[in-house]
Length: 566
Image 1 (cartoon, one colour):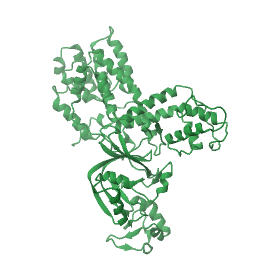
Image 2: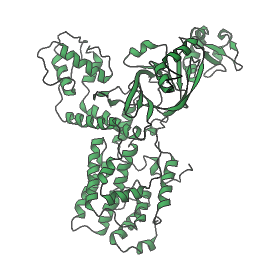
Image 3: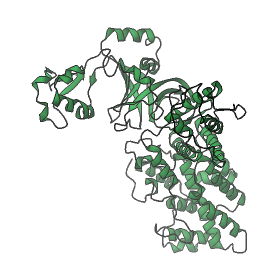
């Protein structure tokens, strides 16, 4: 997620602006030229730490050894944190990182608190003050990095991930110096967090669910037959209690008895909508399961999605399409406002829609459908071996390398084990698998957004039906907005092209960024937190990385290997 050209740009910027060359191991002359005993101790500590296996007296390995050393070299190794106000503000920011779902231990809070105590006492020797100073700088870099890029490197468990941000050539040591001089360390750290209101809303919900986690939970709702409005059931009081705890039912609106009344029904329907269930008011197994999810699990999911926010919510374009795969929804976003949204169908769990970012550059009205290799291998070929006529029944044509149509019955399909030397194509029409439009953006996965004749599937709560592409409800509306040219492309002109039935490619005047993302928790425009099933099992892996101790080797940026050329 953080390519070596990013590392090269960062180090080049540091070296280009360095006042003093970094001190290297064994440079005793530079050490002798420093008269400040704390500066001399900083030189000694940094000299020792050039060996990545050495922890020295710091009690922690430095993840940003080169950056830390360059920072001190530029200031002639003078201590940077003599002003205790700056140090206290940094420690406060580290402690507050827990509200962002991070672990203050990753940023050495306990060590810093202990060293701060010792630095104010008679044991404040130059080596101790040097250690304190170096660890403060290291902790600032660690926290700033995680707030800017997220803690978890999703690329380690999702090779299709391409959301890595690029780092500009701003002078990192210089920015630290300016922050120290202006004594606004806390506010500068706050400014590194995503400014999108979704991030702030998720933080608010994390605090709320953590508070709930500390309170006694209502008894779980036991399994039983589906409960419909108007029925009587001994589980009704438990359902009420659970909905009060989740905030879906006001605490003062608690009816007595076992009857499933209209007030409770409204609360159940609202809860079901927030959980992405069928909002039918029937308390079945799925609703009971969601009611019984403990607050600790909601906390885990919120922490995971906050870290996703630190990865995804920086540097957003002004106008873009985002598909929330776990939420089965596509949005057209301008700034922080939703212009348009629609339900989508995404890849099945064994044919996942990949997560990546691209730019829509053209669309196709009345498209043909060329069957991709994966569908040929997994679906078409096994059926054709049993019955070649299955190809014709699917509305497909078999074309040879010269584009000539071949009768599928004339081919011995049993000769092929995976690929075939033919193209399978479906002509435009109302039954075409891509519907009436496909919206194209470059990628290596044969994935795009498209219409579909399978409109009835949009009424399902779980909509993982495709082979990887994203089927969009009301796709022609999205096409009109992506074209963004009302004089030429409006609902009437698009309808006329569709009625004509001829394939037509249209290049967008302005490319439209497309983000295929994965959110299992978010706060909707009404201020209600929504949770969704972890469709592809991403949350467990993300949570594992989020809870893992800070690792020097967890990211390419920490590598000392030579950086590749940009």
